Length: 68
Image (cartoon, rainbow, N blue to C red; front, top):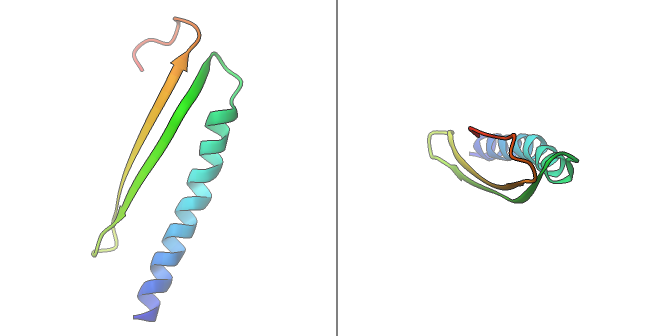
């Protein structure tokens, strides 16, 4: 049972190490757009899988960003 908790803690830590720098980079990026919100929902399933949903709201300052 303790090994299972360690797996969850390791997976969550790894995920946070990957997600947080990307989130900070996206918000502070100096481009022709502004990230207004960046929401992440994560569900840890019983079978050691994750369901992750990201919702990004962006404002583009120029019209050259089509088909995104």
